[in-house]
Length: 451
Image 1 (cartoon, rainbow, N blue to C red):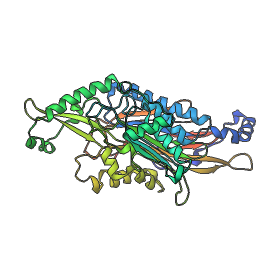
Image 2: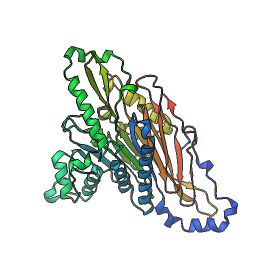
Image 3: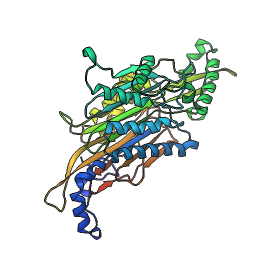
Image 4: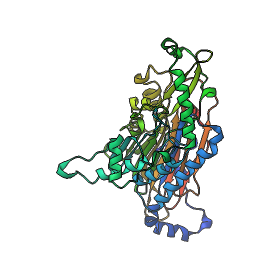
């Protein structure tokens, strides 16, 4: 991999330990490399792309940190990527500040229905659930569907399911040992409060005359000042000690959505994608996308209001963004590849030409094996990882950590200026060498690029 973008670390920048550390340390490290290699790995998570509240910045950062730490704990025990990514998602789902699992958005009926999916880059198996009620961690069901599918055909030669929805998904989960919970546990004070406010606004909006509703596209809305508290989709991508990659995503979907609606988080090729090297693939790639929904209150008359529901889950479904990003990342320059994909396959996609704005976010990871020179006669095998992220929303919160880091790093930033409704925020490529003996990570200059 050639360095792509500022703040990158190439193989030329990887140096042996300082002389003061002693030759004995180098010999011991190389001798124990095979054993220590089980602890090599990396995780990148996101807590959504949307309009995060600045007052909750600390909470967003903390949940990303906890998810990274949980993933690293699993990696250090030798767990495989597909199980590690599920562990990270559980932490994200359990947070009341994310739109996934507990505390998710409520639908029109006042119920919580969740979507989740995961993909294993090694087997290429996929597991997903949609419109799932009464399960605290939907990612557990998606992960179980994936693992059960790997066991082969069912009795009488039946093909095991990889995607289940609604009551069927809930029954399958319980039958496979996943504990269900009361709907009261799923809702939080925050999500219930948001539901009540949105319901009142919707009731008012439905009283507005049809011709007045149809004029909304001609009105400019100050979204920043009218947005109610919102929650966002979560996701993660992981590479383990064997170089396997995995990805996962989980979402409660749009606030006030129609019961039974399934968003991008459950749809193949749209919510997440993971694929190891092999065949025509030079790199292993893992991608997780983020949908966002918000409700803006627009004055139509002196007393009447309209509630505008804007969600990018449908945008991601119609463009299959996760799969498109994975394919693009086989190019030499990861930064340019992601930029072109976001431009041509998403914000300027012919499938979204009629949309006023195109909202979404994505985190991506790619890796390949490489050889590093050592003082011994044999070169060491290591993993070279590149990761970056992009979004078209006002904000995005991400966290990342390797097994050789002391603590997780996170980036949470709100863009104060949106120049146009299809603006892309793209961050520089960061490059990480996962080496049992030593490692290098460049996270310098993480400043957004406006495209």
